[in-house]
Amino acid sequence: MAENRIELDTGTDELLCEILDRVALITLNRPEARNALSDRLTPALRRIIKQCGDDPEVGALLITGAGNAFCAGGDVKAMGNNSNKTEMSFEERVADLRTKQRTLTGALVAVRKPTFAALPGPAAGAGLALALACDMRIAAESAIMSTGYARIGLTGDYGVAWLLTRLVGTSRARELMFLSERIDARRCETLGLVNRVVPDAELRDTTFAIAKSLAEGPSIALACIKDNLDHAMTSDFLESMDQEAENMVRSARTTDHKEAVRAFVEKRKPAFAGY
Image 1 (cartoon, rainbow, N blue to C red):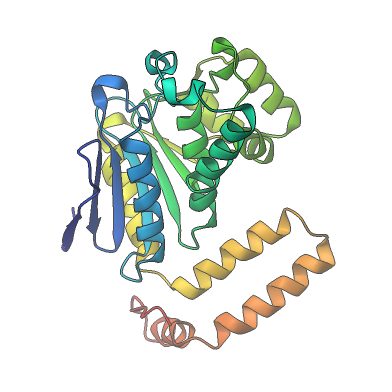
Image 2: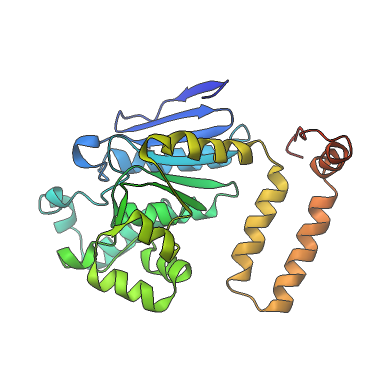
């Protein structure tokens, strides 16, 4: 699949990470628990997102799950056994969760590189939020999504309400949160929860090929595109155009733009340098 491979030490076998041709392939590795988040996996995932987001040798991040699931969210079986949380006050627990959210999905949304989620199976709860925090989601035909929170008497975390509302609109977001139904891959695609659905056997190669194409792309322009799209969600039309003007001029001054123009004239693939 890839020409260059660098394996990163995540500190736990519950999370795997390797850089393949400038793509950071991050694998949640608890298949026996449908890759549910844990006290070992989640801190490692936070560190890896930051490390890969800051690494100039990484051009894109691709998150997936081992086995037949993406991520089942929080480990429900372990929720009743966490004595540390019961010893914390309400205010301490709120502050703790706010920090954890900002350094996981918050950090993932803030990455100025293309980010992808490859879903081989279920994505639920915080696992769904993790997938939605990526720029694009590619799902296997057998994948499903579910908010899941209401079924266990919880309200949602890790930005799921914000992410859902912006992806599918207010009415659908309420439906998905209240009913907590299992949504199959094709309906996820229709709703806009995933960008593409592919045969199960083609998921990894398809998602990696898309991620690799952008990892090798004009990194400054791609970061500016993300800035423009983020800004557009909170600004009016004229403010959005002003933002686009600034980033258009910035990208036009890059070596990558000049190389792309030469490649276009010479009818060849551009070789982007990242500046």
